[in-house]
Amino acid sequence: MTFSSLLLQQTINGLSLGAMYALLALGFTLIYGILELINFAHFNVFMIGSFVALWVLQGFGLSGQAIVLTGLPLVGVLVAAFAVTMGGCGLLGVAIERVTLRPLRNVTGPAAMITTIGVSYILFNIVLLITSAQTMNFPNPLPPLQWNVGGAVVTLQELLIWGVAPILMLGLWAFVQKSRLGKAMRATAQDPEAARMMGVEVDKVVMTAFFLGSALAGAGGMIFGLYYNFTSFLIGFTAGLRAFTAAVLGGIGNVPGAMVGGILIGLIEAYSGQFIATEWADVIIFSILVLVLVFRPSGLFGRVAPTKS
Picture 1 (cartoon, helix red, strand yellow):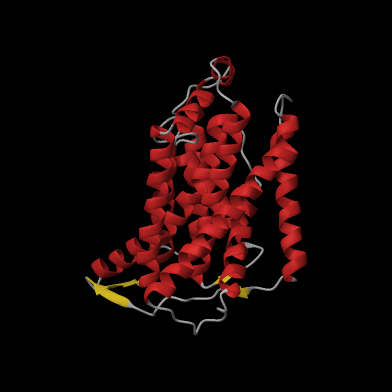
Picture 2 (cartoon, rainbow, N blue to C red):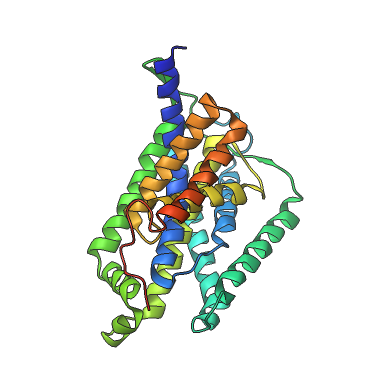
């Protein structure tokens, strides 16, 4: 394989990884933009999303790696799996906000952030008890199709990721920019008290942010399973940290920034793993996190909303 084809192959891999990280990063940035809260439970909402998708696919009678569907059955199964996974994770995010975070809304200091760490460990250990620490094969209903492009290989899984992730991201952007509730979210992010006085239901806005962010994390979890063909109770930590780095790199609180940051982190992971060493990928990614926080804490695209007083 020539250098150009190798570079193209890693670009293809990086775009697939970046799409997954971008979906996960959007959850961080939505919640931070409104509450200025880093939701560490988001790591394991992503992980649970992969298991929900696994169980939904198994509910359709799919298991192992030899299942292949085509035509309308394939489309129907994938749409149903994405819908149930995103809906289930969205409701989980709403429950986390309503039960554990809303009572702390007016408490100053790090209490809310520490609570999300506790919730994350609760979710982690619940899944560990259910799955008995087993790495589980993810059903792969997609035909084993692949195409040669410039010496690189593009698979049907990658085309699915490139199709689904941009639709979800653009749909979120359109919702935030164009819908009435999206405008209320932007108003709340800018000044929650002023928004409340103007008739905005802040609690509804916060709940919506948790639902949408968690639903996108669920979609990212399903994409992880389809891409890697396995899932485990351990997947949330590393993917979550990389997605958080993507959100910070793009400018946490900035929706387009999270998308771009996710793609950049995916490409950096793919290039560094191929051209330097796989062991150095995390060193490079988290060094970027430190450098951004030190030299440009607002990220590449800054914040959409000004810092609240």
